[in-house]
Image (cartoon, rainbow, N blue to C red; front, side):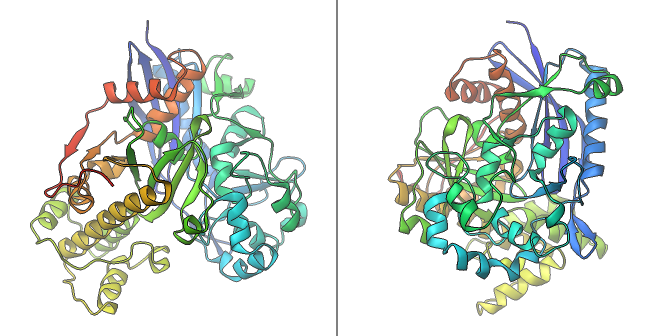
Length: 479
């Protein structure tokens, strides 16, 4: 079978890229044609995303795709979850979207829970409590000046797809992060919309991964130099859904850590788990590709290290990451750790000082050196990964005998080894570009370039990736 070409637009909270994927002969090859920074910035009293700049960068990337790969058949888009833009009745963006790290939801969480107590909210949506979940953002939105003019709330990847095709839909894996989707049926919960006094037509209709959203508009085809037959195919538009689809494991006895700016740690399930114990443990039931359930917890991520690196750089102390990790690896095990889920670490700024203060608040001490702070971050993340995977196994009854780390954190050998050591299980690291691979392969499958099952995607990923294996120094048979 000849090679077929697909483009993945993969945007995270700190950067984005447009990737080209070639699929054929049981393998997939990825190459970045355009990378760009992405960050929320203060504007009009809130922390906001610059959607106009983001869209411009996507178009730069697609022009590069057209120049180098005019045969490209399809484009898929994934980003982070929960955030959205408001459109008016004429489908015009009312304001740049507020970012989830903004503090606007602090004042409305109690109001939401007065309408729908959290145990009842969880029983329907199965979504863990996070103060920036869309359901809370919408409550804050009602207090602003745009609500009366809003006709549509459109999640970030669906906004980008709308600008490319003119079609408004809501992809279901990202919809599940809103807290308004029924976890059992995978459809919008009319009960929650009613109790929260939300218009049931606020979000566009749902669409599953693997459906063709639409063709590029004629004007964009001309501007970009792409064929009029180029389509946008809906993928797991929540980046973790695409990443989990590309975990290179064929059997179900695995846990995963999608490790990036945020970390998401859990297991893949056929059905949601909505028990009181699951709610109390703050696990979430997000939708995956092919209707699976991503049973996981959001865990603090490499954001802590990224922000620390930025702070050191501003002071003129900008060690290379590779050298910093090598020095951190020489420090002894058993050093201080922090709770990486502490809300104190959500906002940008002065991360090393906040980490050191958190250590001292526990009655422990740590050096302020970059290597010591880095080792504290790595050990804390590894401990959280191991504990979360173990708890997921306990809550679901699903045995786990290996942990797959995918995403940017898979390149951090110290993090992967410490996870293996603390879990007592082997860790398989890679692929780094799991999200883009999952994005491309869902498109390829939708257009007939590979088989129909989830295992067909995972087999291509395993055959195409340079996987690194980390054995624990003390091994447990399984969770």
